Length: 151
Image (tube, rainbow, N blue to C red; front, side):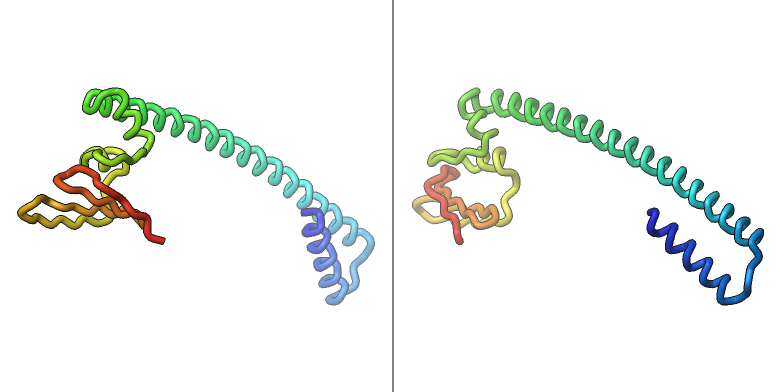
């Protein structure tokens, strides 16, 4: 910022020096004017720094609130899963774990809505594929039989 003010001063002085000759009193007045502007800019910089600090403090406060809300949501979700599946399965689902024999509903409760679903019914059972990004899950009669990560 000091460089900026110095450059402004030099530009101002050079412009005035090129256009006309100024007296010592005009020079002093101009110098006083520029010093006043500099002081005002420095005050404004301080005010802006204080505002930035206040906003950063508010961001920190909001981040803490978001974390608390997310923790509350996780606890609420875990409570619902525990009521639905029991403590052990609920903890595995909330941790995003996968195992053969889990149901389509369990996977959706854990990973959310899949990107793609394919379902085919045959005389020997219903086969479903759920795709999440590069991972494809294979179900037979709504029970997980295998999965594959495509690279």
